[in-house]
Length: 121
Image 1: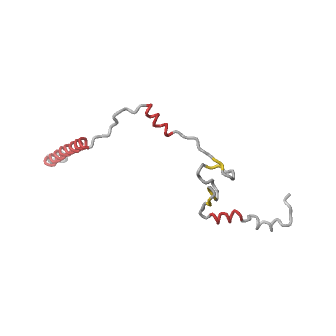
Image 2: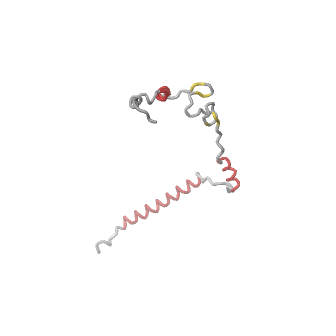
Image 3: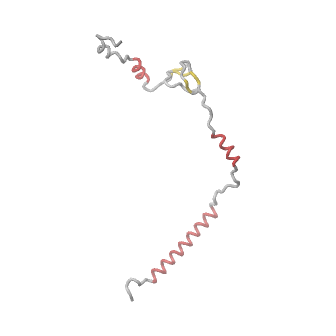
């Protein structure tokens, strides 16, 4: 006997039997799934007209824009950006009092001393 060419016949038979059983089990699984869980297939072709009718709902629509009393443009039934009230009722804005304080505070209060003795004309 030559080294390298020797094969164990028992192992090869076991391997062939295993592959045969595996093929049977895959076939059984396929048939089981096919019988009890059929694929969902469309009954009719989806025509171009039906596609168009469905797509009509996806078309972009013109945006509605309104002006409030201050002249700011916004969407209807929504508060305008930067508004403090809507429909005559005050709106709660998180940190709004702090923001109002910052806006009303004079920014040039500290800079008056720098420009006291001269004119920028």
